[in-house]
Length: 309
Ligand code: SF4
Image (cartoon, rainbow, N blue to C red; front, side, top):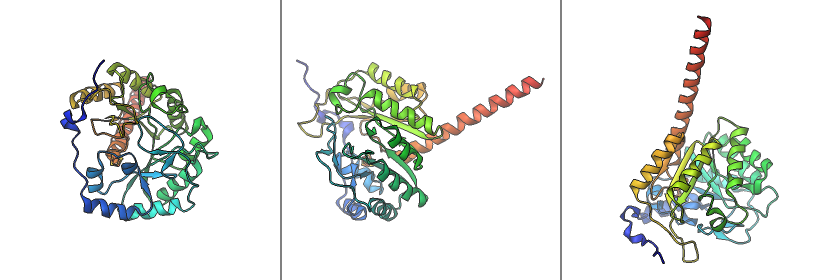
């Protein structure tokens, strides 16, 4: 029997501890709103919160799904709060966030998966001149729900593949699938081609590097712009075990592969999470889009010139 890796062997996973005073002040500014930083026990909370960055968890803090890697509580959620957009805006202003990262629990109990409420939150922030990244659920494959949030004006639409195709059925909730996730990312890009799309995987669940490469190829097949790769950390003993520790050099090699495949921005490292340094990744992707457009315009000008000669 192969033994499982020992997390304390991975020096590179050590993260700055949250500073109690800073944590308390960010928590106060967040009010009653939940964050994925806390709900998912993110290893970067000390670093991000020290910089006043937090990722909001909307639609409540109880998820209708139950994935084997995720620390968020699952069960029967409470009804939505009508004042969630206003509370969110208050917290964003208090934290003075220019680029706001939102995520949410899955709400399979709601007819639209929570899309209208998410759209209200996005519009409240856009009307206040903020840029918005939304890590969206799959809305059970409901294209209309996806359209509602895409049309609300998100600047980045993220949706995580979470793991490689072979492991998805045993690691993700049975209602999620690789094909459904790819279809969502594809539909978002087709609806608004200028939209930056983003996806991520957690490594260490038993996948091989070749399978990660296959996942990247599939993501580029639906024109995903931004990729994040991070190390899976087991939240509790009830969750899936960590099967391998990926060291920083392996992450760097995978990041090189991702850039070669055409991702415009890549973050890969043991503590990388979907929302880690999100604004910087978004800006890099925008620059990449601009360069592509400039390249196309230059190509067209050259062809026109040649045709005239
Ligand atoms: S990486 Fe994201 S989830 Fe983790 S602490 Fe930073 S903002 Fe929060």
